[in-house]
Amino acid sequence: MEVLSCSHDTPRAMAAEIHEGSVPAYYREVHGAVCCRTDERVQVEVFQRLLQRADLSGAVVGQIAEHVDAADGFLSKLSLYKALALIALAQQGKQPSPKLLENCIQELPRPELGEPRGLSALRMQPAQEDALTMTHTLDKLLVRDTVQMELIPEKKGLFLKHVEYQVTSERYKISVYRRYTDFDVFHEVLLQRFAYRVVPALPPKRMLKGVLTSVSERDFIEGRRRALCRFMNLVARHPVFSEDELVKTFLTFSGSDVQSKVRDAYKKTGDEFMTNRIATLAKEYLPADIQAQFSTSRELIRNIHNSFHKLRDRAEKMAERSKENATDLLMFGRELSTLGSDASPLPSLASSQSTWGTLRQALKSLSVEFAVLSDKAAQQGRREEDDVVEKLNLFLDLLQSYRDLCERHEKGVLHEHQRALHKYSVMKRQMMSATVQPKEQASVEQLESRIVQQENAIQTMELRNYFSLFCLHQETQLIFTYLPITSHILGSFVNSQVQGHREMGEVWNELQPKLGCLFGANNGLKPTSKT
Image 1 (cartoon, rainbow, N blue to C red):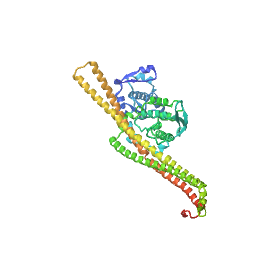
Image 2: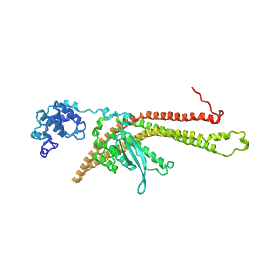
Image 3: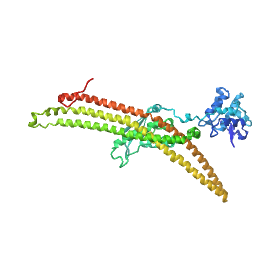
Image 4: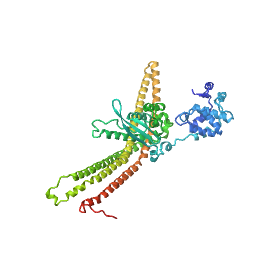
């Protein structure tokens, strides 16, 4: 039986209670008109609209709101009843206080709010496009934050040396220092907090023996730094993660034990299902064909993922070729210098006829130009790696996290729900058997209690399943929101090629007339046409 407590302000008021049966029918009808569709709570926004119908001054409305509990954006049924009584007192010209409400506890006054059926229009209709559709553009996501990560010179611990990173958030204007183990704990907690969202994976802590033998330790550490930087930027720009206290703590806390701080932040909130105000209402917002939409989107994103993998592989090869070209140009120039530095005397049979001695002297100076060409080629490789390959890897990290999310949904929430239903059916069969074959009353009652517990667990799992689908729908949109990054990647690729070819072309053009001066007109060079 429900009990209305008129106030939580004083011990005397706490004692003032009213049984559900004595609540006026009008109160129950108003509640039925404005409460959520799936439970008894009333959204704060709806209650505020209800207050506007009361035709009270702003000061009085503020007094009423002050005495009404609204946890996580909702009023309970009892809180609404209390609010209706306070509204009625205020409309009578009396002070809307819980103390005054004690005097009319046996017969609650009726507020003047109109017919209950007319109040249903105040209830916020679940607009699917508003709840499900992401309004963010890629540009808006990219400017949320930019996280830079730099390696700090290695520090030697008591036994092993470790790598430390300086993490700088443009949004919070602060730099903090983190070790890989800090990222590991943060990732673990982030996955617990947002199990129904795309949480990017972390790079491995160390090189895998026998797998990365061709990669030096320095290259591995640099690759890991890049991967951690991509991870942090995806997290810091996520429309949900970026506003969570957990992420802010990791990016700003400068104390000695960030791992405990991160774990404590999670303990205070729990997972997203416990804190999201529409988590239990997710079913209302889902379109009827959500499963079909999910299957179609998943297949499309899988194909996009495969194509971007191939693009990344080709971009990596081009960047590697630019680096190899830089090495070849440098070595080519050095060989010319070595050839020109050979002071061995020419044999008499060649000295009178050959110009080799003069050419040999000229070759010494060419290594400088080829060193410049090598440097330009190396810069081209770095541009291709930083501007093209990294952007491709960023999107690939997001696509892979989406694939992981789909697997978590199917193997986690859905699987647990099916197991719970199976367990429930077994219990029901046991209960039917117990009614046919007489057993001890205690064991039957225990079985009934377990069945009730299992029913509650199944109900919670169903709500979580719908919320998981709700989040999955939003995360699918996030993938599509990121798709225009393709134009960013192509722009970076074209710009890097234009700049690289222009810079190297300038050096080659400077070298051409120099060769003409050194070796004379008959040197195999084709004259350049001038327009």
